[in-house]
Image 1 (cartoon, rainbow, N blue to C red):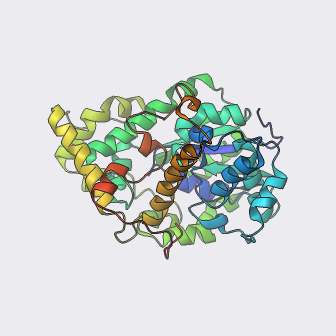
Image 2: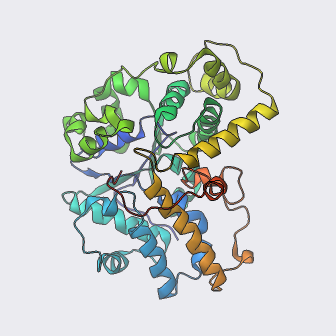
Length: 385
């Protein structure tokens, strides 16, 4: 079934470190639009719904609701809720007994708490891999895709506490993201799809936000330019990975790759994702470099090892990762209990079996290396983000 809302959902997508959080913060300041913190619902739950069994059964549906409600990276998106009753409250408000029903009820709850705003939006970068599924659930959803120079995004990614650890893997992810949206940019009309360049947004924020409001059918409000004054932006801006959110838009983050990437790293990026960079409207300024299969495999292995080894480093994401690991464990536990079996797995269910399945579902390190390095889980921490 599909849920068609009078107030169309707004889905903000883009490769990580491309400005999706900035757009999230800006639109969330609109008086009619509520946008919670990053969600990761589609990537962590939607492909694995078969592992919950028949959702018409109360126990199965409740399990899904509990894991979604309690699985937010920022607990309850900062809403004031009673943990003992919140699941029952969400279940009582679903429009249908489905993943989409819970997803919608959660966002509507947030919108009410954000000042009874009539419309909600959602930002998870990797929702770009699930445009098909989002449209199946919410046929009239509108998408805003943010593109940033892949070299800058990759340089930023390498500096972050949660991204790839070498330029080859960073370029590989950026390329994969760009290619994932190509068919949807062509299929969806101008009433459902809007492209935004990060560079233009930070240079001319008012102009681009007015265009975005026209696309969404909303009246422009200058409050969106003061996003950095919100609690969300202040909290994000206090972290190493999101300092730009703590102040007004600036173009000083354009071209950072020239300082942060070596010439060799720039050439590696060109080799891996030069074609996609040109297609996105950016100019190449170095020649590609030859990379052997052995070098590629080493890049990928070292990335996996380092990701796992640094999960609990300062500003690391061990708490978030531990919950992701727990979700995988719960799936296997339900299988052992007979809730589902291998034959229940839908054919061609993306990203199951994909070489980058763990990455796409939001894992920050790969289970193989976490187990190899005996990384200990941690389910509580000081930082929510």
